[in-house]
Image 1: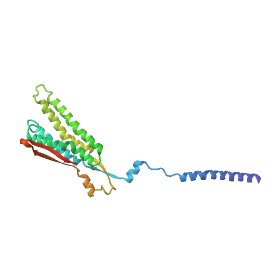
Image 2 (image 1 turned 135 degrees about the vertical axis):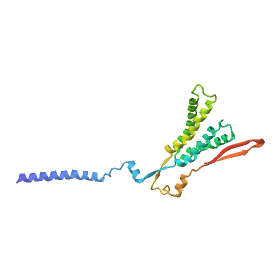
Image 3 (image 1 turned 120 degrees about the vertical axis):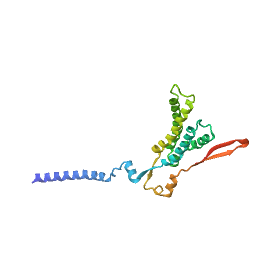
Image 4 (image 1 turned 120 degrees about the horizontal axis):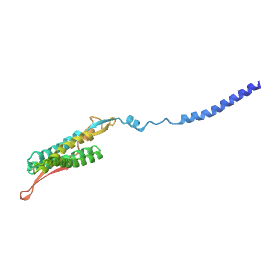
Length: 218
């Protein structure tokens, strides 16, 4: 009988010890907060977005200016030596150079604007040098192969660079739950319109002089 009582007391003591140890552990696990989801999942749930294309604005400005400048150099027999070709080149080049960068900057894409601006300068010069080398490669090349080849490669780059800029960089993420930027809202429509204007200017100087240029507002 005494052995049974001792065995019962030992079992009760062991059960109490296990309970004392288990309760703090259960409380510790209960007090711990649940693991937080990864930041990307939080952003994906809280800020769903839609990819929007604004590259058409680059095509309407930079590409139009590039085509005008390229036509002004390729169509005449002597590039930039006639008044219409010089006028077309002077009017078209500012649109080509600033059309893409200004469009990116108005959409808040500062780095894309810098990339676009650098490409607008580098690739036409590189294209001109390549065109010059190709045109003057034959032994029976004409005397003006250097100038004609340079302007040919230069003009091809003027037409190509804005298209590549628009297709590769002319995208932005629009939050779907942002009432300011939802599709059809007036403020989004005003944001999608380019916030810059360029117009050609001309002036008759004294003593028969004639001045042409381009004026813009950003």
